[in-house]
Image (cartoon, rainbow, N blue to C red; front, side, top):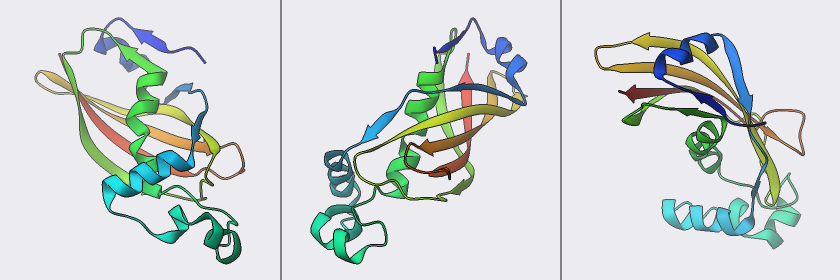
Length: 153
């Protein structure tokens, strides 16, 4: 799906309660999983040891860290929507996060982005996005989150 391009923050109001878009697929390679493990000091075998995972894991292979999947939220939102006239956007936090299904190494994920709320503040706009990340290998989402962002004019 092509990126939604909005001329200003005010145009975002039309998406409250609606889906903005669905991103393209992104492959989560074993190399990316390994780099994330190094960056976060989370070297659990279920993420790094393919041989052991093939025999001891219920997933039969290594899986991505849930936090790796979550960390891609900003990437996916930037892929789905461009808002002109924004000086800076700031990650304000998360309201809810769940990881209903694993992401096996080398599988592809994408995100469905919807706008839950929009609040006008003095010189910024605070929005809450609903992010549902889908895995091409599962009927269940791999990550569901509510992400709060502040856009400054």
